[in-house]
Length: 185
Image 1 (cartoon, rainbow, N blue to C red):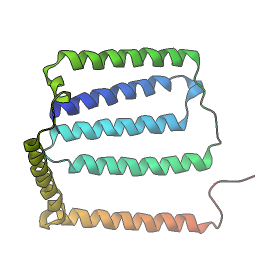
Image 2 (spheres, rainbow, N blue to C red):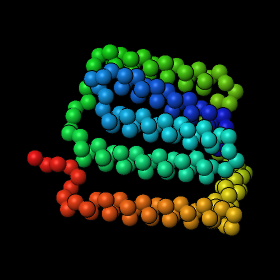
Image 3 (cartoon, helix red, strand yellow):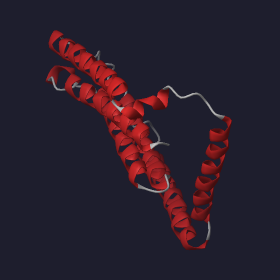
């Protein structure tokens, strides 16, 4: 992926993160779903930032998968323990949301019309470029294959064993009690 395009998407995700952060600033409207969405967007920002500075994308993919699995566990915990509360959005947050959306649209239009790399979106698809894309993906696939070969296979096998042991431990903890973790009245 082109670095300029990746920086552009990072700016877009950063604006989304700022919008979600200001939506949850009011103490009356803090909802776990808003927090999970903001953590998800923040982890996507970190992964995109890592993929800019690394030659291969395997570290950002691994970090994203770890964050998503943790967020799924948190989401299951919240859905089993928290009652179904309505999300309240008062007028202050609504006006703040509209202000940020307008600023975001202005930023995108400014970047699209004023920077020279905005011509990326205007280019036509070229067959020779598609061949280069296939070669680029082949090089990245070779980097992923190296994860399972000699110098790095110990890390992969140890992480598989760690996940297996943690799965057995969680099953053992949950099977001590013969009823659900949520108390139903």
